[in-house]
Length: 429
Image (cartoon, rainbow, N blue to C red; front, top):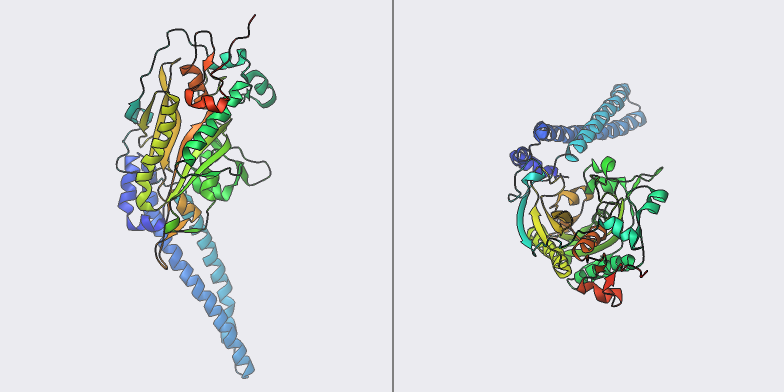
């Protein structure tokens, strides 16, 4: 969420940002938030004074009683105070709830370089790498091919778990493990700590790291508990340092998260709906960083380059997209996507999301950095996919597919496959 101090200091900046997002219905919230915040603190001071007055009167009544003096006037005053305090507390609770409601829904302030657009059509291409190749033969639908070659089973997964799940099998399992190890090895060389987070996160912390709409649209709630299955390791890694303060010398903290991820949404259905691109359950290696505010934009570009390096080493063509104001969501101040080339459909599709969330998550989680003996400020947080294995596997299957349906293993993954260079060969006879 936004720091309310920043909103009070720059209300017109917040309004201008909402106009840029075309989020006009929230414009009145800015002045309402400031007004209710002022009323909250004024009323809280009054309520505290009433409580203090109640304590003083109690002492005065005891002193008058001991001195044998009349204390009925004080008793009458004391009787009036509890209802006044209760009335103030009721209003304070209402104000607190409304302030929280608004802060949870106001979006992050966008970086000036974010392109303006109403929807994904306004996203801006930044660069491309590699030359997309058109297949010289008709590429097989990846899901059908993987099932035929005994590398995956979508049908039986749907039978036992529903659509959006898969049994990976044989060499495809090894290839996925190889992708994870390859991604982790790349990041370890760059100073990232490996983290395997819990796969459940409590709602209190989840509310601080993602848009509230995700609770209905994306995440699986644990029945009978106030917890959710994680949609990405970014979320528990962000919450790991909740209510803590870093020393400046400790930053940046660079984490490499390895986890299974769970998401409700699958997306559009089509010929590849029984496939690996959008899954309810998938594995991912995620980059996550806590840093000083002055370092976050440089680190944003660094995380993007780390993900680009992986796809370059896999020799899969891609392009980098800067996400526009109408497509970016409320948490990120700036976001890039990497879209890999999928030759069967001759199109680019998202495989990496890379966001600078500035202090938006840190405010909700109360994560700060000590600047001096007393002074503190909120850290900035960044996240970037290194590899979501299901999407990367599909990209490999399509970009490395041979005419006979076998799949060549990218050279950088061969050592992780025990020297296996081709998978999915059709059994003789």
